[in-house]
Image: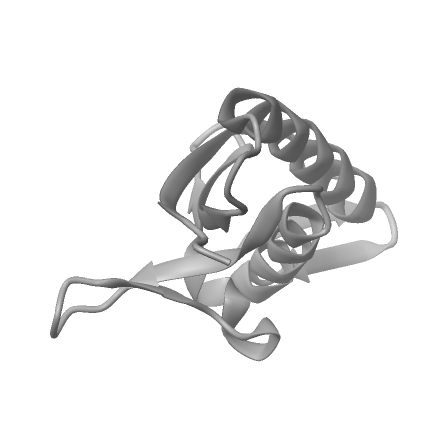
Length: 117
């Protein structure tokens, strides 16, 4: 949780706020099938539903007040993975910083799978 204070009081931004903003921004990018999670029981990668997409996002808080966001995604077959990574990084950074006024130090995109359909 990040706490920001100003002359009017204290604002606390919960981790879920960051994960929801980042997950929505990432899944709105062209070529992204959805967020992914690796099952602990069978080791397979599973596509997350919209309600649970925050499980594919990890937010780490740095000592300097910035955050690092890790995204696990599934992409559509035939898309340029490098271009998707750049688009997601830019989109997530922009949306999180605009919505929360928190500086995003890095956005790490992990392509866990390519969709067969």
